[in-house]
Length: 185
Ligand SMILES: CC(C)(COP(=O)(O)OP(=O)(O)OC[C@H]1O[C@@H](n2cnc3c(N)ncnc32)[C@H](O)[C@@H]1OP(=O)(O)O)[C@@H](O)C(=O)NCCC(=O)NCCS
Image (cartoon, rainbow, N blue to C red; front, top):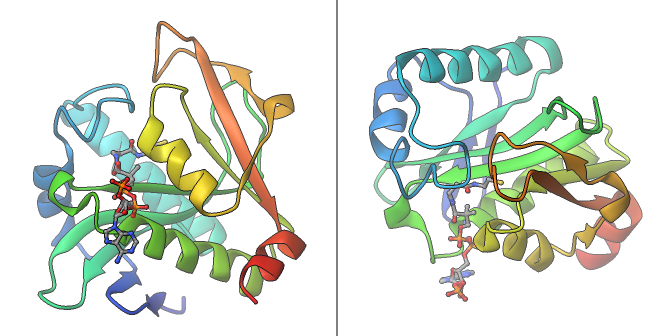
């Protein structure tokens, strides 16, 4: 399998290495980062999440890749592409997602990594449309979707209480290839 590695100005998006996982969980399995992701994971939860990310790579040659900062090699979190598979939602669509350690928020790293992910979704992985999922309460996440030029797709919203039991709903944004390419001119 060809290794994935994609550089931006400040970041490297790359495949996972064995040694990444301990640092990733230490940095991101926190109350703040996991607030809208079902809360801090126990050992089984971490093992399941890792297995899912590895299965996406094996099945589709893309996953939520490691995001590494070039200046000091710090693992900031993940960002990348999966195929949508959330219970009750749209299935098998190209989906972009992100999760960064708290110290890395507010620097535009998530946007930079997400732009790279959308670029490769359309240019390398043949996507015609990419969706993103979140909950109403996760303002930073849907704010990023808007900053990327994605548009709200209420028609794709679905009932799911895994991430926000009160709302009981996952909301969807999307962007198609033509719109993405026209925003990048
Ligand atoms: C969602 C998440 C990735 C967003 O991260 P973020 O850092 O807010 O997003 P961006 O990369 O777009 O950064 C935007 C901020 O960086 C600032 N910024 C600073 N330097 C910047 C630069 N060089 N370029 C762009 N923006 C910059 C922007 O002004 C903006 O700040 P503001 O919101 O105060 O105006 C982050 O909150 C996170 O990891 N959350 C926990 C996990 C999670 O919920 N994931 C999503 C599940 S659906």
